[in-house]
Image 1 (cartoon, rainbow over the protein chains, first blue to last red):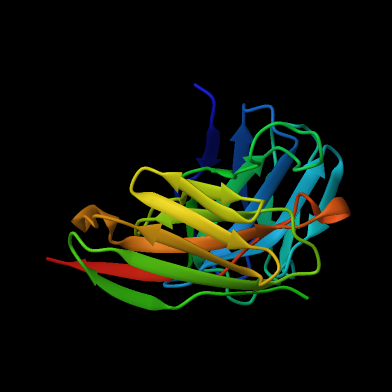
Image 2: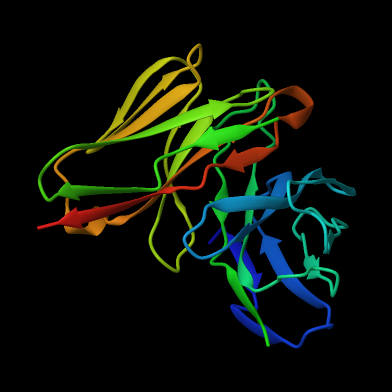
Length: 118
Length: 112
């Protein structure tokens, strides 16, 4: 079945450690996204990628890094520079949303990764 | 800049109708989405509007006015399972067509 897989589902990290969250999709989507969600809040965009080997900062990119070496994969690294990393992280993919593309361009989400810093 | 506003919380009664509003100010616009999110889960897609007007899908309808930067989600015949957060999101335009920004969400509680 097509979809998005995030791992791990739960992750604990000590302060000062980097951690990488995995996101893989087999929907053949060009665009991929990382969002952060804090309790009772909406989704805030960390990074997004429109195509392989390209990515752009979202609204809260500081303390995070990404790579897009393959169409299917968009891993997120939470670095020690991120001051308050405890949150729910959601990966998503979609078509690029350009004129002429078929479909609504809705986001398809993974199940999320819950990161807790001890 | 970009700004998407929604009410923080709403309460409604089972069987009734509720309207959740969303206003947006963005540098470019190429469509508005509504998502439903139950606590601890990923959001699920409800609707998409790119042209002015009303889109109906079962108990849920979504309306868009591009000139006013305004949308609403209408939920009819409310059920207890509709208790969730409802997120409004806007897609950018042109070189930002892949950028999708969310509002803070509206937490809807349904009472019997």
